[in-house]
Length: 304
Image (cartoon, rainbow, N blue to C red; front, side, top):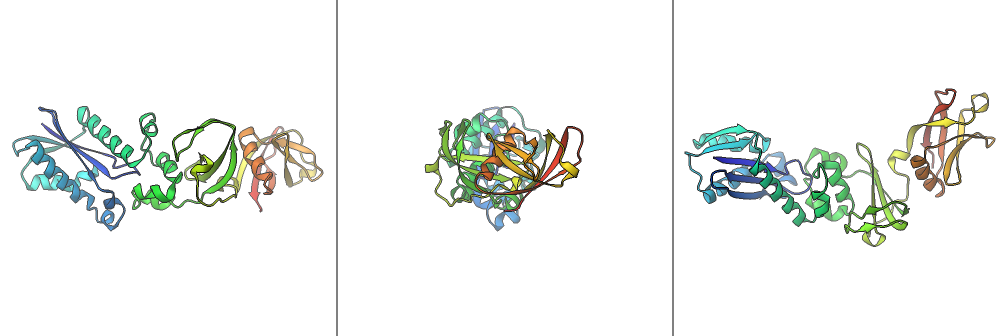
């Protein structure tokens, strides 16, 4: 039996891998739909599906596939035109969920391919959902000008998120991390360049200073521009005083009244981030809402 499967059609990085396996002889053929089919008008015309047919023709020739062979085709949209071609050429084929040896082989082949493109081996090998869009976007944003050339840039998801505004600033890292530019460890405390942005959630990238050569944008990231958080109250503001202030006290951020009375404290992760930007001179407008006996909703908006 002949099986046909794909890998990488959902990966932001690289083209798409097509694998063909003769399950009786274990002979295997693999090739890649080139990236240009995902970076130009070829994508809108779905010509990557035509290229699949060319790959399969070569694979059938290498594996000596005949019209007497039983053929199973993965149900992916990548094979839509191939299915018509198989029918028109009177091959004995059917749709199938491909599992087992071919699935493993084609995924391994695609993994080797993207590693050769530059994606770190550990980044792929030791991560669940290694080819998830937002995970790969972090790797691209660590060296965007070069790595965007490895992306499926005609994807709607790239059009939506690929030019997302990023805050880029000097920082001192207080926890262990990996530099997504060189792949080496960052051991705290160490000076770094931090890149922050927001897609479906806030994301942070840390790089060695020598690994970053672009311009800095030392401005609070988007998710800190205007947001709400819940704080525990120490005191209620007098007369329901609406306008409040933030102040750094012992590396924590406290919420104070106009008179300087401490009303509450931001939770630690948020407090550290806000303290960093307060110390750079940025100011937030603050209001308490939905007061209760021991907590309140704090609304914050960056005003400079």
